[in-house]
Length: 180
Image (cartoon, rainbow, N blue to C red; front, side, top):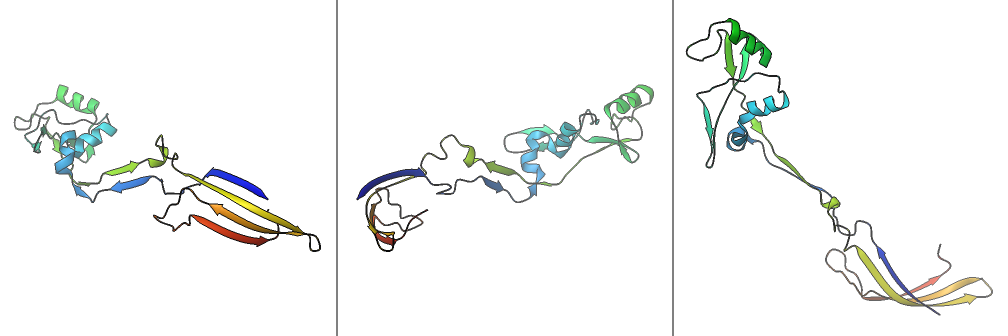
């Protein structure tokens, strides 16, 4: 006759994996406005590129309004800040655009998607509730002729969960043989 108590953590008992949320592709106008539009995002990633110092275009939402400045292009290539400074120093400027002749602003437009990852697995208390416990009694009789135990087991589960998997409060089990 033996009594036992057991407590342990069950791996991934209730799923606490990271979750990813993605929006549909949306026009850049409503939410990229506060950043200055897609052009400003490109310049943040490529700080050597030149952008127009002024603009006649604004991007406005309910709470903010910002000036949309364009990337500067001459011919078929984007200008760097150094190249734009050289052109301003040596050449005349167009009175309409206030840019050197031959330089045009381009504005990037498109659609954007926001992706958010909720790192639930890295939260401070993510694994605190994954404990299971049980209590029980086992009656083991060793059979002398065949040399195997007959076991009668009664187990009691104090933390029954019946949300996803139906668990029993108490069980009787009978087994013949050894466990490994």
